[in-house]
Image 1 (tube, rainbow, N blue to C red):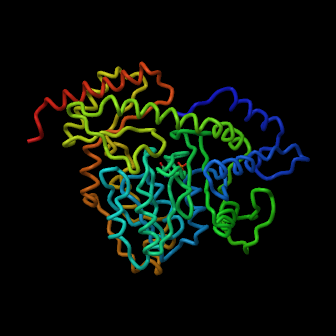
Image 2: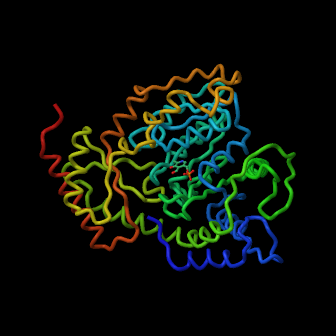
Image 3: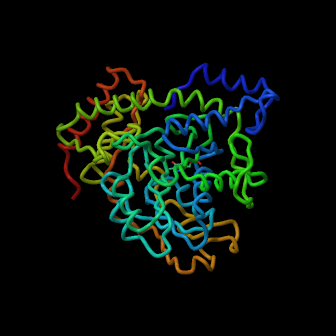
Length: 409
Ligand SMILES: Cc1ncc(COP(=O)(O)O)c(C=O)c1O
């Protein structure tokens, strides 16, 4: 869905010509410091003090967990509707993911979060899926009440905003973004970790460049070094991301304009029920959600909508069909194979002995029911008004057909 043009090609080419493609370097060697400049610009745009450019969103999540000292003995609460990385990231740090229900908004259910809290809970990980937003007011309140940390997964919500204007990822103690191919802005693959906490930032930096903990500007860290990995982004990707960032607010504005226009036109039509968005017109606006009485109706709607919309760059699907975005398809997690060998498996770690989580194909029936009767329709920021109205018409026609059909017996 991202927009791109000759500017991205020129920015990448400029870096390629310097021969200085590694993120650390000095201007006297023709190094352009693109990663450093992107980090400063992203921090400004998201309203946070610190940004670290990483190779992926998963890497950004792990930097956040390293930053907040999450490890064996800790539980991280995640929703059942999210990309599998939400479970893999805490497991990679030795912590245990506790999977909870989503509510009618498709986002993490705040009541389910409260019920899942144990003495070992360290982090709530609200995932702003599909550009929609979790109820950050309620989640932050729960976190304060129970003295928990909040790591926002904004990997599907780059540049999305909460109702008070704060950006997704910038509300909790740390946030993570992904810029892989499926996002509103992209360079193929990369991500960013953000925080306002200086020490957490430095630990994230050390973790992402384990050999030598250098701050973005090339200065030394003030924390003692510890072993980490190599999760760096590079100069070529950062140069592309700087151009992409320049496009972000226009994309978000156009997505919201498109969704709002469709929303207005379909409101009240027979068979049309829009899902509630937390905080109103929040997030990136990348998807419009519809709710049906049951799975059969949802599937009938998708078939009728596709036939009517004529397939012109229009996508509609049931979240239940989205592969490893639903927890019942996380076979490694369900089998508690949390690492490459038994000794490294967090589920076997003595510090996690008290975390008696059990996962199964039967867990979270409420989430399953919600995901089966929901349809998400992808918005396109570049649709013309005519196309937008055509999509709205196709929704109304398809919903009327479903509404007139027999209910599940
Ligand atoms: C919700 C969510 N979290 C984390 C990630 C991980 O991002 P990446 O693929 O950049 O590692 C993704 C990827 O799409 C995602 O959708």
